[in-house]
Length: 141
Image 1 (cartoon, rainbow, N blue to C red):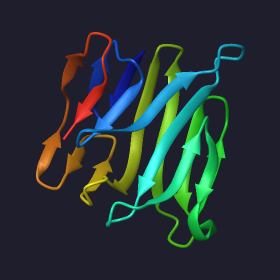
Image 2 (cartoon, rainbow, N blue to C red; image 1 turned 180 degrees about the vertical axis):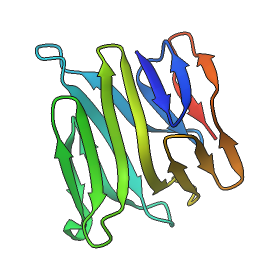
Image 3 (spheres, rainbow, N blue to C red; image 1 turned 135 degrees about the horizontal axis):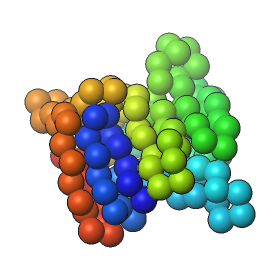
Image 4 (cartoon, rainbow, N blue to C red; image 1 turned 120 degrees about the vertical axis):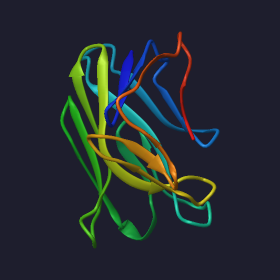
């Protein structure tokens, strides 16, 4: 599976996105329907899990602060009070998932942001790169 994070393309991934050394996002396709499935752990600034997606379903939702909107090709996790998009994933083709928008804390408390043009963690940024990860994880940060 190929994964876009902002404008960066990671080819031949196993569907895992590691952020600062922790597998924070896992992408897969449902075998029977080809629908996008997302596993994701959302941390607060102190490293505590505040929300968790398992196969695109909210399993942990502290204080009922988050909502998931999904179709077979798009998943969007939003913070209800602010309306901020925490995570937006889109299945562009059967072999390409795009992470186009989002902002959340890493387990180390750093802010990770994704826009259509780049991803960034504090002062570390990447834009317009292509990398073959040869069956491994996308490693960010």
